[in-house]
Each structure stands twice: as structure tokens, then as C-alpha cells.
Amino acid sequence: EGMNFEGAQAAFATVVRAEAMRHQYLLESDKLTEIDKSEFRSLFESGMSAELLGQSIWILSRLLQKHYGTQVVILIDEYDVPLAKAYEHGYYDQMVILIRTVLHQALKTNESLKFAVLTGCMRIAKESIFTGLNNLKVQSISSVKFDKYFGFTDDEVAEMLAYYGLEKKHRTAKAWYDGYRFGNVLVYCPWDIINYVDDLRSE
Image 1 (tube, one colour):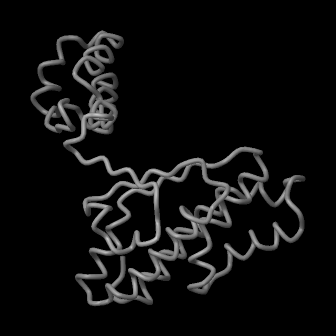
Image 2 (tube, rainbow, N blue to C red):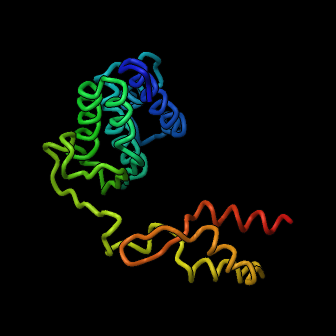
């Protein structure tokens, strides 16, 4: 988010730095060369260039693959929020270029990638930022292939409540939190249910 492109780019760089910080153990890895580690350290620098920012996820995934010896899975939640904010504040064209660069490096030319999952409200197939990417499989909220995996099903909530001896709270949980439909399945928001059960257990 940002009121202008410069602010949004700086915020993006902060997120990348925070993610790199979670993996500081890579600096001690005997699987990485000194050149690899130097490249990794560049992700900690303030004032990260747009070019480095565009390559950042690709760099991190490549180094993680070298360290662990297996391809990585990349999860990007709400990929379209920066685009919506950019449109709102008048720097959409600049943000499209940045997001397209990041996704191209991370998803198309990345041999370290096993697969990626992107979530968002904008339909991927119609977004220009995905020009040049192939093998995209779009699953909308009406798709049935993965419908039961977008939250807890009613049976799962009942099982969880029974596990903690809270069977009598099932009707209340259903009234308060059952309201999402994906494909053919009604699901509960996992975060809401977990918090609900935690609150009940602490009473």
C-alpha cells in the first residue's frame, strides 16, 4: 500500500526484507557459496532498487532450494491488493510493471519453483500482469475441485467441538460463522472457529 508509487515500492521492499530476515540461517549454510550469501545480504539493504526488488522472490527461492535440496512452493496472498491501491491513488501503470516483473521472475523463469498459489479477487486470466506466464490454472469460488479446502467444513467443525467436549456449541458456531460457499461446499473461516474454540476453552 502507499499514497504514491515510491511509498508502495518502499513498503514492498520492507516486506521482502522481513521475509529474508526469517531465513537468516542461510548465512550459515554450507550449501551456499560466498557469492550466494552476498546476494542474500543484498535483500537486507535499505533503499532496495526496483531491479533487485523484482528479482527478490526468485533470489530467495533459489537460495532456499540450494540449502534444502528441494524445490520451493511460493504462496502469494491477495496479489491484487497493491494493484487496487495503485489504481485508487493514480500509479497503476507503475505498479503493474513492478508486479509483472516480480511474478515473471518468481513464477516463469524460476527453476527452483515446484508450484505457486496466488489468491486474489481479480480474475487472473484477464489481468495484463500475467502476460507471458503459462500453465496458469484458475480456480474461482464457484470451482468444485478444491471447494472443501477453503475452510473448515461443518463435519470438521463438529469434530473439533466434540474433541474438546463442546458439542452443544455447534449450533451457535453454525449461526455465527457458517457463511462461505466455495463450489458446492459451505465452509467456516478457520481463523474464526479456532478463536471461538479457544475462547470457549478459556472460560
